[in-house]
Image 1 (cartoon, rainbow, N blue to C red):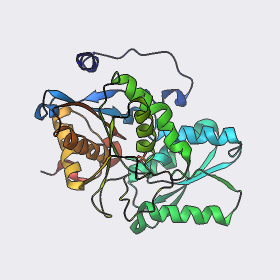
Image 2: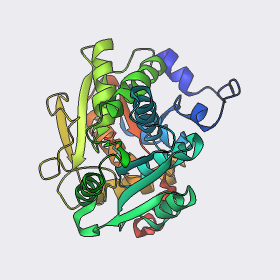
Image 3: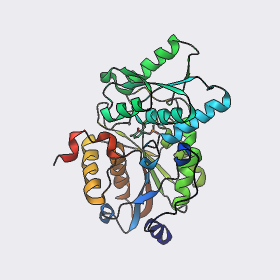
Image 4: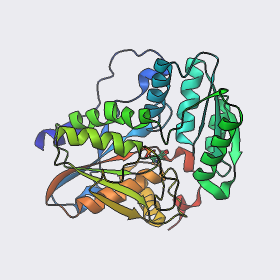
Length: 318
Ligand SMILES: Cc1ncc(COP(=O)(O)O)c(C=O)c1O
C-alpha cells in the first residue's frame, strides 16, 4: 500500500518513446486517486480511477474500437474500400471515426438524434456518414435501425456490432486489466464498473479474476430505464448485449442520475476534475463500496471527460 501511495504522488510521468500515429496514443492511461474526497474513507482504503478520457478519441472506447478493427482485418472481414457500420450512443462512434480516418475506411453510424451536439459535430468533423435514429427509442432504437440498414444491403458493410462482438471485451482483457493490475502492484481488491455494452466489465473483470480470484467485481447500472447516465444501460428492459454475462459480477448496484450530477460538481470543485456523467456515477458506486471497507484498493473506470456534456444544465445547479 505504501508503495502504491507513493506512486500516486509521483510528480510527472516519464514522456516515453515516440509513437506512430494516433493508435500509438491509445491505452496506458494513468490511475488517479482523490486526495480530498477520500478523506471520508477509513485510512486503509484507497479509491482509484482509470483516466480513460486521456485516450486520443477522448474515451475508453478507443480500446475496443481498435481491437474490433484489427480483429476484423485479421479475419478478412474488413478490407480496404469497405465501410464500417455500427450503432453507438457516441463514444464508440468517435473512436471508429478517428480510427477509420487514420486507416482509410469510411464509417457509417446510427446515432440517437438526441446525442449531444458536441458529439454530432465531432463525428461530422471526422467525415462520418451519420444516420439519426428516433431519440425516444434511445440506443436500442439505434440498434434496431442499424440491423435494418445492414440487412437491406447484404455485404455492403462491415457491421462491427459492438454489443455482440467478442473483440469488444477482449480489448479490455488484453489492455485495461493488465494495466490496472500493474499500476496497483496487484493490490486491487475491488473492481467497480458501469455497464453499457458491458465490454469493459466483461474483459477487465475476467482477466482480473485470473490474476486473483478474490478480487470482487461490482457492476453498476442506472436505477431505471429512463435515466441521464449517458453510455449506460438498464439491463432489465434494454436489448441485452450478447457479450454480457450476468453471472460474472459478484454484485450489482443501481445508481440514480442525480447522485452522478452531484458527484460531477464535487469532482470539479473539490478535485479539479471535469469528468463525464458515467464517470461520476462510477465514482459514486466506488465510494459506496469503499465506505463499507476497513481496508482495500477499489478501482473504477472514468470512461470520458466532461467536454461532451458541458451544454447540460446540471453543472451550475446548486
Ligand atoms: C460515457 C460512457 N460510459 C460508459 C460506457 C460503458 O462502457 P462499456 O460499453 O464497455 O460497458 C460507455 C460505452 O459506450 C460510455 O460511452
